[in-house]
Image (cartoon, rainbow, N blue to C red; front, top):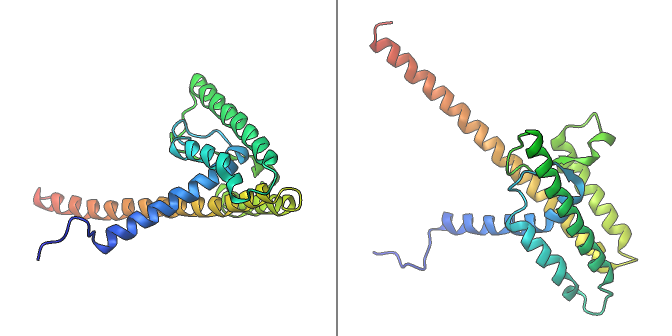
Length: 193
């Protein structure tokens, strides 16, 4: 029986669904990352930066009766931080400092938590801080507060997914090392060593 072109295998549909959710999470996370991190990779601010800009701009639709001015102020601050981030990329490049092009930056909060690893600060501390700020802003601007809480969730998901992917790559490299070691032993036996 021939498969219909519109019917994808289950694992491919699941991969597309997961990728879509990760894109949404990264779009929500990006505004927080721009404020919380320095030394972003030169290519990190790509599609999610553009989509985050659109998201911040249209977020007031969520609450049409609310005051959109806090969101517009946040949008202005976001654009300024994107500009500052881009200047940081150019400075690093001119100084010869090489950073992974897709690196999502070094946390600014690391100086306040020197005993914690970068991953712990990114995965735990930053989402808690952004959530806390969002909850504090809810009475002042429900629109901005809700956006920051959603951004904190996106931040936690994005960083966790990134770490999971890095762990998977490291395990694949280790598997390849084991395989190469076995092949090298066979090769040496063939050569009589």
